[in-house]
Length: 53
Image 1: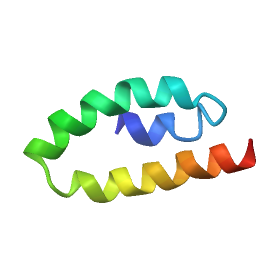
Image 2: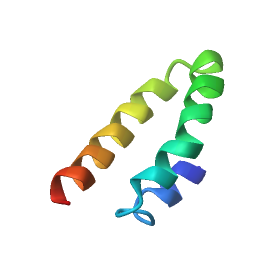
Image 3: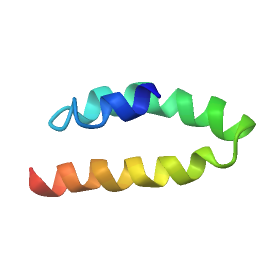
């Protein structure tokens, strides 16, 4: 839920994105495998932002 709202918010702030995402993935992925799918989309969005920069 929070991730969805953060996607379009910090398009030029990849460092802030990695900080909360890192622990979230470890905690969430361990309890929810489907989260990986969502993470894949996040990585794509983050990569896109990096490419645009």
